[in-house]
Length: 297
Ligand code: GDP
Image (cartoon, rainbow, N blue to C red):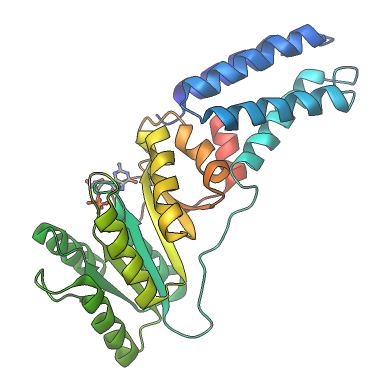
């Protein structure tokens, strides 16, 4: 289960306070030490942990929390609020274009769940907005990638624009956008190539697609199971492409929590959606407050 270890350790750290009628500064110091260790062990970025702990400690010390009624309960509330803040406070909606089509470019490393997420998003838009998306198959390096997108699209009854693997991806996107214009699609979702790791050629190609397509949204798909690597990946993609949002996948797995808690603070970019399974309906809007509650258990 996701966050299992983190939840347990945070609960334990704070449970110790609950037995006490009054919380001393040294009790608080001990709790903060345990919270810090719990976060580090969950693979949360070191600077994020440091800032988080400082923030909680300052608030607990500052507002006479220790002297007041139910100090333990108040500290739980502060931790909850600061977790929420660390993840961005509010849900951030998908960027939309004033005139159709809204263009969404999917980027990410191979295996992160980009193609699956493209399909999930298309289905979500169809179901919730009655939208008519077109998907563009821009990953020309793996023939299987196009087949996979075609299969995903067929399952949700969404058209795919593809020109096989012998055409330059920028040209595919150009023609795909022309097709969308002709067919009055309200969304275009561009699936792009991924690699096992970030390389310059991939980034240049994505930058060229971005320059041509002027996407309203560049959604970076990262695998929550990869912890700090997900954060490094996000920094790499964001540095080159200035992404507009992140999709965190595989939160149905036993991820420790590092990616969810670090990405917003480290990159400044919001997590917009979370993937919670392999089915096409397993995509949800990311709500920082709900995630904080889930982490606290
Ligand atoms: P891509 O290479 O980035 O396009 O990745 P794919 O879309 O092919 O996904 C890689 C694998 O991860 C596939 O087996 C997907 O079914 C799986 N996957 C994607 N998103 C999720 C998710 O949210 N949860 C789980 N459990 N599996 C996922």
